Amino acid sequence: MSTLMQHKKTNPVIDPESIRRDFPILNRTVNGNQLVYLDNAATTQKPQIVIDELARYYSEYNSNVHRGIHTLADEATQAYEKARQKVANFIGAPKTEQIIFTRGATESINLVAYAWGRKNIGKGDRIVLTQMEHHANLVPWVALAKETGAELEYIPIDEQGCLDLDDIGEIISRNTKLVSVTQMSNVLGTINPVEKTIEIAHDRGAIALVDAAQSVPHMPVDVKSMDADFVAFSAHKMLGPTGIGILYGKEELLSGMEPFNYGGEMINEVRYDFADWAALPHKFEAGTPNIAGVVAFSPALDYLRNIGMANVRQHEIELTGYTLDRLSSLGSIRIFGPMNPELRGGAISFIDNDVHPHDLAQLLDQSGVAIRAGHHCAQPLHRLLGIGSTARASFYIYNTKEEIDQLIDALKEARRYFGHE
Image 1: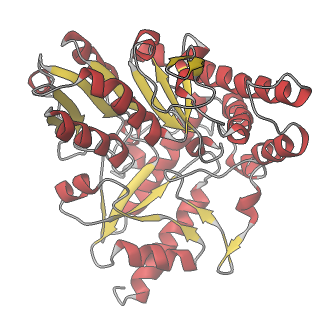
Image 2: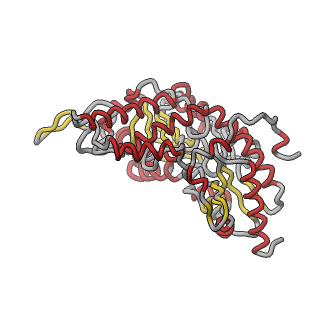
Image 3: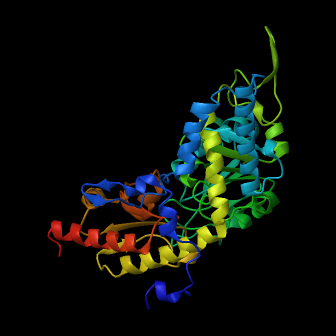
């Protein structure tokens, strides 16, 4: 039975054709063909309302925030803090002070590694990760372990690309100080049971960080019910501008952490021989922030809220199931990750047994189909899988089944070009 037919079909919950009209870049052609954008796990496209807000900030109220008392400064500050409130509401954070703006999910995780990790993790302590982590949730902890003498331990994956939790009670031991896991793999698409992992971490006296860069844009996420201590994600993967990251943290943890950067804005009082820090969230936001990016993230959040994150998730389940079914019909394709679309997100990594992923990506581009090829910032995972790189197609709210058909046709054409069909 095909992958798609194993799952109950539902009526479309969103209309991607209508949504597409809000994204000007989707009207362009690439190499004489209509663009088919399937690289959304890397970054999503931006609706016109986000582009308009970027322009409106620079043309109507460009000013620094939190520092001036003139009209433009007040308008900029209000827009900036309004966006922070929307982020808090979007992920269910109890207080806006728990939302820290950074340059990306990568910086958010590094902030925790630097400001919390160096104070709380020492020689012989254990840091637990998974075998499917993105470099952003791996390299900072490798560096910290090297610096402090802490031990790294990894929750393994099974043959389906899901976490093997059989020995998790031993892996997350009593000397574990931190458990840091992705909620959704950017390679395997796997959606991990982070709530269970967090519960075990807390039972062992450890804190838990969730890399939600791939999950917050694609499914409902409530940080309070999840009970994570820290959650990191990025605006640009959910219709917002690049250069904006978010770190959510529990208030007591953030309050006990020293700043990550020092300078203007993050201080309460400075003397020639003394400085103390501003209250949350400002003590972690030194210098002039990416104001334009933050205020333009606000309409992106509104856009997704209007669609409904449960609807976003359902659309991707349908599209992922359809894609898995179509790819499976190509005998030369090997797919990585769970074959049940309800267990994974809309990022599908695969290889053609006869054509290198980079060659596939280049040939598909000639047909206007944009996919990713490489190790996707997950080299250890690819080595574990026994391959150097994969091709990856990833979806969002504006993608259609017709585009998946174009992907399949382009894959067949690539095989013909290399003489395999």
